[in-house]
Every structure is written in structure tokens, then in C-alpha cells.
Length: 431
Image 1 (cartoon, one colour):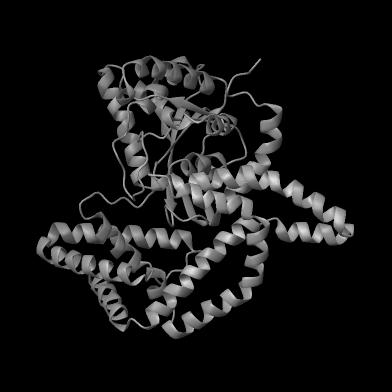
Image 2 (cartoon, rainbow, N blue to C red):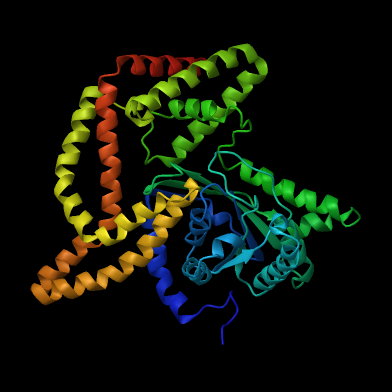
């Protein structure tokens, strides 16, 4: 008989370590900050921003090595294979009102199960925006998180508060595998205290207060661009401002990006005409840069010639490793790349790649182990297996290096683009 979703099964307990390792390996650089803020004296609801499809709940999953139950929109459970993976990861489906009248009943059942999870001491995670959007911004905070939090607070044993913990997720790239992730844990919202202070207020006011607290907590821990219309230009300027900071220094890049966005928004308020001129310039620059196939990273760091030569040398050194890794993991990464091309929602690409690699490479490694130990001496076979272990991730790192080599050489021969970049950077410094 199948147990409750919050109960640990044998497979979950033993495969969780492998799953955690795969998820962490999906990022070139990964940093969590503020884990010590997570309360230990009550029920905890994680509330991350939702910008990178299933990678968002997976980022919360590996925050700490402990069970976490999630909800995700019901339509992604349509395929049985994906549904099994999601259920293994303790993700429950939740219908939305937009999915039809029947969804209201299903949603109420999911909320009841969520409250049951919290009452049994297991942490719960809800993506409070309801749907994902690959942008450095926030959408409307839905009612679901407020209903779960209030319901849990009303049924929790006395002296055990309910907390909502905002989790700000900042990805280096929403569409490239093996990017970076910087996760900031915000100050917990004590829902029990908040509701106690609003006993005489209308239910809607209490719900709105919880949702506003979640919104404020998330906004304080992400780069939040409020204007969708000028989003691309503002984000381009933010990345220019942090271009000299290496991708591995995640916190510094985050702070530089957020400070740049705040300066640009202030400029737009104080000098709309000046801001409009700057935004028009950056739009033109972005278009030319993309048409030329040049990345901001190529423009932002180092002298063009030395950067092009250095990356080319690194690519030559990496070539034999790439060939071995690419051949060894070909049945994993090649089907993944073929299948992601058919995905309409680009934000799902990394989630899909991650799932394929977890499943495919876990099945392939024992095959390679059998082949190696049957054909080589045990110590050579063991060494070869260790070398092959990160193969799928090496492949994607080499893809990234190849793109960088190409971009670096194009940058070298596009003096006008480099000049425009430096001019925009100086304009930013004046704000």
C-alpha cells in the first residue's frame, strides 16, 4: 500500500543522495546564503520565486538534506514517466482555477494535504507565483500560499508557529545547462504572530497581509525589475555593470546587478528623458551585439586578444576530454538535446535536461562499470570509471567553452561593439 507523500520510503532515503549530487552538479557554481535563518521551532513553508520551471523546486530540495514536499501545476504530470519522477521527489499536483471548475475541488484537497504535511513536521514548498516566467522580476503572489499557511496555523499544536521562508533564486542563465545559481534565504515570516495581530480583521485582509509579506521577502532577495516593457534594456545594463566580476563570485554579481537596477529605476523617475535616451542606446547595442553573436562576458573581462587566445588554448586542452566524455555519454546528452528542441516553453529546457541526465546516466554508469571491469584490470577500470563519472557535465561545459571561444574571436574583430560597451559602462557609472 502506498504511504503518505511526506513519509520516506526506502528508495527515497537511499537515492536521495544520488539525486542531490546530480542536482548540485547541474550548476557550475552554486551558493546558498542564509540557511541559518530557517526556523527549527515550527512548521516551515518555503516560498521561492518561480523563474526556471522545475529547477526552482529542485534548488529548494537540495537546500538541506531533508524531506520537502512540493506542489506544482497539474498539467506537467500528464506524462506518466515525468509524473513518477515528480512523485519520487515528493511533488504533488495542484490545479488552478484557470484549469476549469473541477480544479477547485482538487485544489482544496491539495491544500488539505499540504496542511497535513506541515502538521507531521515535514517542510513544504509552494511556488507562490503560480506559474514560472524566466525573468528577474516578480509576478502576482497567489492565494494558495496564504490559504495553506493560515490553515496550518489554525491546526498546529499550541506553541508551534508556522513560518513562511522566502527563497530568492538568481540564475546566471535560464536556458543554459551548467549555469550558476545563487540562492538567498530571506527573513522568515511568522504567520502565527501575523494572524494573531489581525484577529479582528476580515479574512481577505489577513490573506492579503500574508501575500504581501511573501512578496516583500522575495523582492528583498532577488534582482527585481518592475517594468516589463523595458525589462530587456534594464537587464542588459545591469549585466554590463557587473561584467568585470567573475561568474564564480555570485554574491558580488548579485549585489552589482541589483544596485544597477535600482540606479536605473531612480534615473527613470528623476530624469525620464535622460533614461529614455540611455535605454534607446542600449536597445541598439543589444541588437547589434546579438546579431554579431557576442556575449557580454566576452566584452566585460580581459583584453580581447589575450582572452581569445586563452580560451582557444583551453579549448584545445579540453578537446580530448570532451571527445571521451561525449562518446561515453552520447546516449544521454544527444537525445536530451534533440528532445528539448521540440519544447515550446524554453524555461523547461534545463529541467528536462536535468531529468534526462539523472535517469539516463544513472542507468548507463553500471553498464560502463561492467564493460570496464570485464576488460581491464580492476585498478585501471576503477580509474577509468572515476574519469567517466562527470561525463555529461563535462560535455555541457565544453559546449559553453566553444561558445565562448567563438564569441571572444568575434569580439576581437568588432572594435565598434567594444567601444559602445565601454561608453555604456561609463554612462552607468555616472548614474
